[in-house]
Length: 450
Image 1 (tube, rainbow, N blue to C red):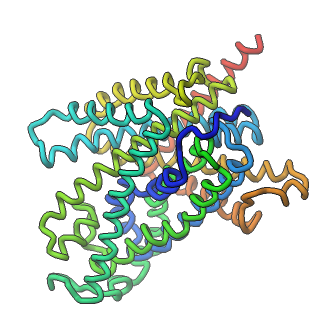
Image 2 (tube, one colour):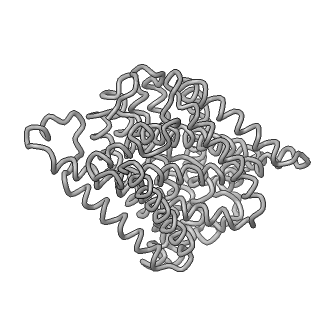
């Protein structure tokens, strides 16, 4: 495997904030409403379970990334430990995931901007957004890190403000009196699990979608100035981030608003600020969701670009995509930007329901990548001697039980997609993509061997 030059520009604070903001996005600010409707207050358990899966996946990725920080990250680890096809399909599945999420966020930004500029054509905001994130990604890893740093500060500040506001409402009874406010909202309307185990299981897809993107921590390893220190610190903040930004935030939301009132017509965060009498809550949230979407596009381009570049260097993507300038995969990033331009045009021609489908499809791609990361780490351990395992600088905890739990949970989630008809379109699209890319892999390999 080929490493890239150290000192490429991502400092400890960049890595930390990328880790901090990677799971705070549209999935939390808007998607949480759908998860609450499906599971009721028991959605708290779903976030805890999903968070545990994410933690074990990131520890698996962290173990491999600290041991060997390379361009291509997990796609290269999977190729090394599970074989050529596995690495190839993992890398392209990740790129596929990043592109479809970018498409959703690009269109979302254009829609959000109509709040202030209703008469401006949507394509203007799409073009401006692509220029901003394109420039940040083409300039250097440092500029990418600075933009992500700023966007994460906005997102994190909004969540902390909501948590503090929620605590104030509960402690000082600041509600407007229109509905009951109290911790007993967790169980006084149908119980803690009002829709039964089925409702709770249905929320798994939405919750895992919200956690999508956290794997970018592994991609940053090859750009970090000191991956042996920064990656473990970033990964180890995951449990605290999940408890604070997800579980605690959702706890206040369902305590202040009876779960049936969280309909998804507005963000649960807006409902918190509205209860506090903050009349400009909609405008405030608009700033936050624009920042979240911009941050997502920025980091998704970064991650997809680095993974494809690593694949190109190992012969699993066109050779020109492996060329970098100042450590930046210029041609790969440009290709991704062109795909986004074409994709956004197509996105405008489709009905609004495309966003729900994109979320489901992104979840398929996300958990597929997570599964391959976990399997690669398990395979890597089986290739080690006891001495080599003991010398690991960032070993996974609770080996091997934590890994087996995460793998079983992800397989179970695929089963949910088979079981529930709403997810069949995304499941079929994911399978078709896998089959097509597999065909291209074997065609390319046969030509190479000829």
